Length: 142
Image (tube, rainbow, N blue to C red; front, side):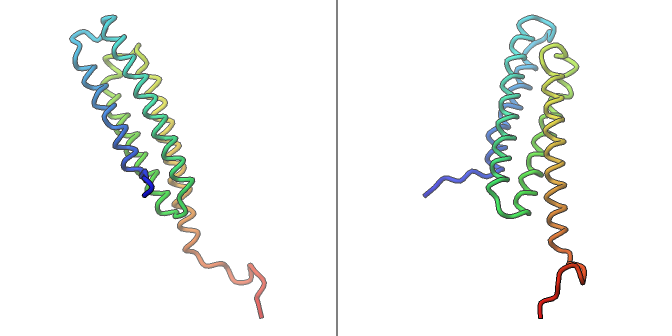
């Protein structure tokens, strides 16, 4: 039997990184200390990798899917994941502004926007498939 990866599993595999970055941030009393920034910056890099890998995986899943509804569901899941990343980073941006937080926040925003664009495109295609062709657009077959 071939193993199959779905978008839920893909997102689930990336979610622990969100918890870990929050835990590392909470473990320091002084977020301005060198040790705190160094540890947090490592977490930011790991979160960046996780975010990029999850987006790439979702893109591959969408390309292999033949169903527009499934493609739309992939992008809805990724939008939720990006929103989780952004929610996690909102508070951390204030405490760790010089440790890469702004850049990863902006990257998550960019990915969320890209997912929203792809979702909109899939939903438009779904709607177009439901429309009847206007009479006279194509030659009538006798």
